[in-house]
Amino acid sequence: MSPDQPSPLVENILELKQQRNAVILVHNYQRPEVQAIADFLGDSLGLSRQAERTEAEVIVFCGVHFMAETAAILCPDRLVLLPDAEAGCPMADMITAEKLRELKARHPGVPVVAYVNTSAEVKAESDICCTSANAAQVVASLADAEEVIFIPDQYLGAWTEAHSDKRFIPWPGYCHVHVAIRPEHIERLKADHPHAVVLCHPECTPAVTDIADEVLSTSGMVKFARASDAPEYIVATETGILDRLRKENPDKRFYAATERAICPDMKKITLEKVLWSLEELQYEVRVPPEIRERALHAVQRMITITG
Ligand code: 13P
Ligand code: SF4
Image 1: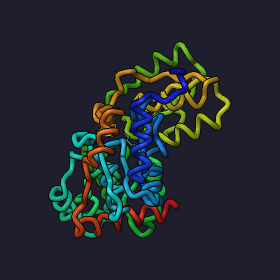
Image 2: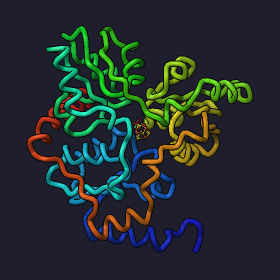
Image 3: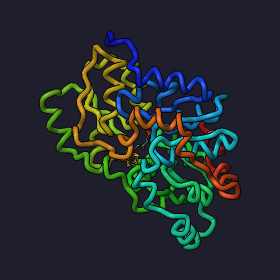
Image 4: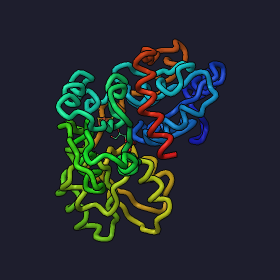
């Protein structure tokens, strides 16, 4: 078998994908072999847009639960599958609909901006969603508001607040993968590669975003590296994105801020599980209609504003 020839496992996936009329959506943090079978590879915003546009009957979502759930909110007539039912996002679990209702009761009339890394129940209690790619634009769209409740990521919140004219009421959520990236990691690499461009995800702490050259969503990093002439980059986010960056830019060098920035939930999806998911049509991600309708309002409003 030549290195370019698909393995029997991949061949089976592609065959079954056709039989099932399925599309495979893959997040930038997935394992390289899973990225390789993507019909679309992207960040949370790009994947939501693709889900909304697809004509396929089945969406196999290689990412974490809130991403598949967002696809199910946007496409109630499609079968949305998550190949591992346990692939969640610990940050999304840091706020519940009940806790959000309590917070709203303490700040009546203040609009709620929910990062897409939230459950459908939480989105249903929110006014508008955002992703790391569009948070500042979403907040700016709330022209009449002087204050916003921003949930659940305190660090995306802090970064967005610094680029806004509004006062933020934050929630103390965080991503355990991104908070483990420390400024010392970047400073050490900078000593060896002084001209490297530092790309950083806004889920990182302010100590890291402050010393970054660019603060971007995962697909924002892909676009930046493609367009830039710089030969070297230090990348402060989950390491899965480095596979894509290196593959697409073989003449440029990419260094992970720390090789330990690995999201165990993202890595739960394997090729074997994707095949099994297509065979058994498991695990279906569904949102009850009364929650879906309210959550859709918040997701759709974001998509309408950011195009
Ligand atoms: P992106 O939308 O930038 O891909 O980020 C999603 C995520 O979960 C980051 O940890
Ligand atoms: Fe959630 Fe962090 Fe994993 Fe993204 S990297 S899915 S925010 S735990």
